[in-house]
Image (cartoon, rainbow, N blue to C red):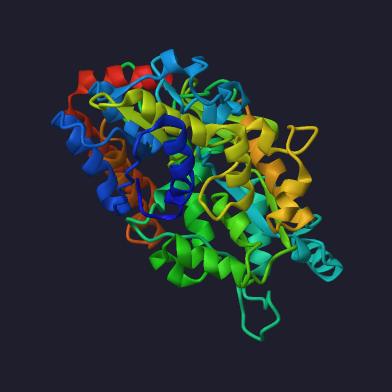
Length: 459
């Protein structure tokens, strides 16, 4: 497993697991940048050093296509193992647990990006009056990217934490190589995906021709470039930690990122506890339908859910010498009793995504679970509602799970940075990304990639 916060839950299970199974649990933690290569090398060579890995969802392309991990369907309903219910997982993240009709990933973390905003600022009558005078409509939680831009523009340059220093409308991590491409993936969904086009985003499933340079993608990147000027210039060099710290210090009115930020806002040192609203990623009033080759306008905002991120979950090596013990451990971690604790405390990197994580009427969770973990009531109600709406949205940004997925994303990341910094126009940057995508596909084998892409997407 990676040696970040996502690794903190499993050591807590060691004594319970060993007492229940008689097995010995050895945990190997490696840096994120070495994690995939470490596990992949083991299964590629059939060594069987590792029985299981806490993997990112995008790994499944390589792991399933290479027949390196085993499905756990035969264990799932076996009474010898801890029981967990895959039906409790909301539709968005549930789709990442299976591949080609078989269950491979045991539920754990449920990643996705949502929008965070300063509730206190948006509810301030002085700001409401000034915003109305400037933009001609009421200040409210943004539901479209146009509104998001206006709100960020209004607050940019104002003192947002009463320390006498000008702050910014927005703070996001944009450093290449630090997962900044995920911001674009979340933002771009409603510009490309719509009711008539629920899945054509990455490639043409018939030819594997890249779609990343289409008109919807270009408009999305133009919007992201517009937003860059509403944050500090240093954003171009920020990793996640710096962007989160900026928001937690009260220095940004808006951001969009993972569930970790909502939990961190409740911790000691946060300047924004009790002030953090959350909502799904904004939408658009039109998207470019790749299926129809034209822009399609919508009356209500076109909002698209996402499972952007790693969604860290357990997989079992084909070469495991103890696959049943490995599944027992992963199922124990997935059980309701454990998962409720993990999602409520948040600092372990495990985000909510199952019905028992959410409050009635959305789910069966209890408010007390979160209040005892230190959450502000208003903050956690907004946070859980945002994630429920995000993961329950019938439209979801397609998740890339093919061999070389991270190579495609890294290529995209480099060219997004060129647009964000002004080195290339959004159109030129995405055309360059499409060229790189095509080269990666050719290197890995077009027919192999086409088969894997169709299987991963359910075409």
